[in-house]
Image (tube, rainbow, N blue to C red; front, top):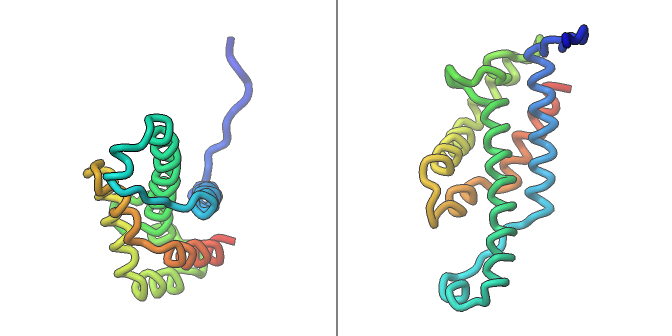
Length: 151
């Protein structure tokens, strides 16, 4: 049975706006789910139910941050595989503004790349530390900029 319904192709701008919506939602989840810490001694001797609750919560926190890092890189990335980024496909008339912002914030952008790469290549006990090198206010700064550029 064939369908006559055709899915329209997304433009780069549509994709950027969709990614931004997901980024914004993921960041809101990060802010609503603050990271908690548990020292190894306490964790080792905690009841199984407490361990499970902590691990479930911790997994949510880290998952939200991973999504945010992915969407940030997808939107601001300046490397060859960053196919939807505002760097490679800037909205009309925003080219210089984007390049200036990325140049001024290149150390922060590099920290985001490094955090994302560490998250995906070193899933270990230091996983949480890799995502904590970027402060929420730093992510908010980039998100606000992307919003002004896209909308």
